[in-house]
Amino acid sequence: MVKFDIKELNIWFGAFQVLKRVSMEIRSNEILSVIGPSNSGKTTFLRTLNRLSDMQPNFKRSGQVMFEGTDIKKIDPELLRKKVGMVFALPLSLPLSIFENVAYGMRMHQEKNRITLLNRAERALKEAYLWDEVKDRLDESAFKLSGGQQQRLCIARTLAVEPEVILFDEPCSGLDPISTAKVEDAMVKLKEHYTIVLVTNNVKQAARVGDRTAFFLSGELVELDATDKLFTAPKDKRTDDYIRGKFG
Image (cartoon, rainbow, N blue to C red; front, side, top):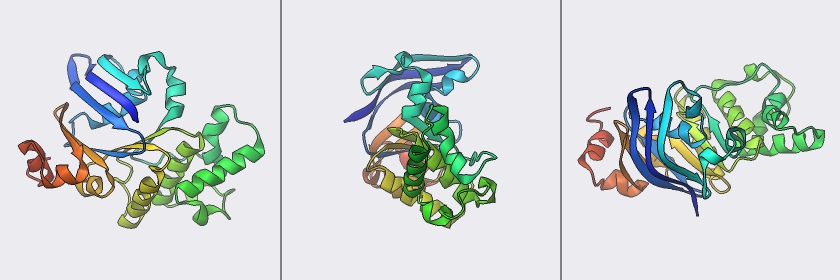
């Protein structure tokens, strides 16, 4: 099943064109890795999927982005962002307890039942591979957690509102290898129930977790293929050069 169907997507901020005629599909229950050098349009592409880019000054879009058959322009942004959650590069823990961090999004969507909040928070923390580390500390400040734990807490907060798609924007950029491995393990497990789009500058990470990989360069989608094919036999020389570290 196709989750997103993107056709001839162009994005401008003012006079500067960030994305150029991007056409692709994002499938249900896959991890799509998105790679490319800085300023290639990866994050703008990601933020376009849940209309976060719409909030930036001088934003203009042409082309079509369909989510489950509906143009995202016709979907209320708040509803879209509930269905298409996002985890950012830096953990954005709130000055609240661990539990209240996870419950925050649920409360924002008018969930008030204490039992429901507790049950969904526990499930989300388990899905984020964090429950065993915090189950006896739920009333403690989230700021007492390590950086890697805070990132997984942010994943749990996203999961608690029951999205269908999770967008990851460089989620491991500030993490140590052990924390990175835990986040990657969580992503691989999560794709059983969610669609995941991962923007990463770590080519090895893209190869480890991606079912398919998209290579962006200067706002263009150069190549999209099964990850093993793209990394072993890319069709475009620019893809091969980037993977081999010749630029980027």
